Image (cartoon, rainbow, N blue to C red; front, side, top):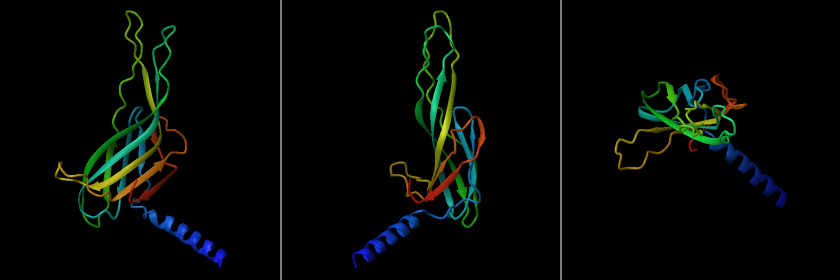
Length: 177
């Protein structure tokens, strides 16, 4: 009896965890472009209903800064950053919603020490490891909290991105992030 209970509970836990993931709302995986210090996303989503939707990108990556090369100046250490950007699109019920040029924010300007009498031009880059696309209806009243999220699409990259187009290794669609 005890074995049967454990097996039943395990089966419910497995199927319950599978039910949390929503069916993918995209026609194809979203596309991403690493612009050096920002990440741009584009895609086409299904089954989101009608009205104005806010799509937010949260791009996570490692920022590296290389200061010009004066003697004795160490570059700042590489740090993880989360860059956020959003865009509003209008959706028609039962029609795919297409979005493009959804760009993350820029990281803060790098701080490099200045050599006496010189201005230094630092090299600044972010290598992205994951991105989340959050889709929710637009809240028209700024005094109210944001409306309930419709979808959260979390994508990971096989390796940190290099500048230019990059494909996610996989994306998972959920109703919450």
